[in-house]
Image (cartoon, rainbow, N blue to C red; front, side):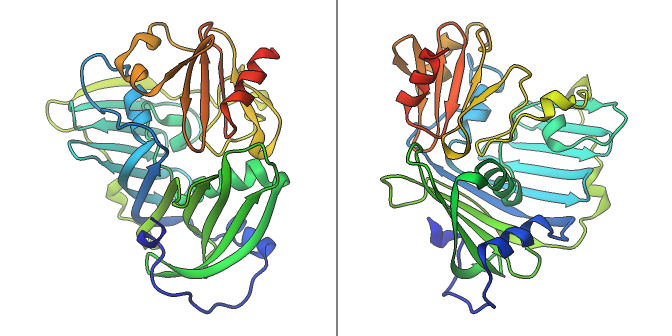
Length: 339
């Protein structure tokens, strides 16, 4: 799996320390780019249908990105303009962010959601009205470095070529034994410090459980017209208001390597690789447990159901409480019993 993104033999680059590579990523000057991102997930889950009767809106699209390979075109021009085009076998999904205007389009049913308003430019994380879980390597690398930096051994691995660019390798190893993660590798562009690829290995597995990498990349500003979107003729359009900016209290919730955390009642126990996030009773939508998609990926456990993968586990209890983390299932069950 690694060979699909790391091309050729080791390249010769001036030596760097782990801290220097982290500093390069933190201070990368890249503000505009366009490229193709490929995500491959081998977490041990069955294939999840993206369409079909009886699916919970948003549930299947979110779960499908935990299996197989997905490709997206990514365009960024500064902090307030972005476009992500996810190319599926049967449909394309587009997220277009242009200052205060945000569009999400799904060609499968020719539907569009327009999000507008607010006094500050939107970000893709704030404005997405439906799941678009393919991030960029930079987003994923930042999640890991922010959430686990206090509990990590960092080393420099062999350099390589990613998307035609030479890259350093920063290897992260958990300092905690209470995690499913064996290691994380981040390929860092030798010229700009931009993260080009992220590879996550699970304990007990030889092949990576998750990879996210650019397969081609340009650091020139994309055409401005890419950030203007007009729904195709006949599309059904839903209008929504831009969500309010988070309050200081909610914005203090630490980020997670598995995705964004924005629920106002979310709590975190532990730290770093062994952190467990919890949502209170009633957090699960009514009727979701009887949904066919849910039943396909969840296994019954005492008091509820669990989504188990090689990297992340999620425990959903019958009272609607949710516990998740990059830890074994029994750790989630213990956390639930302690509340």
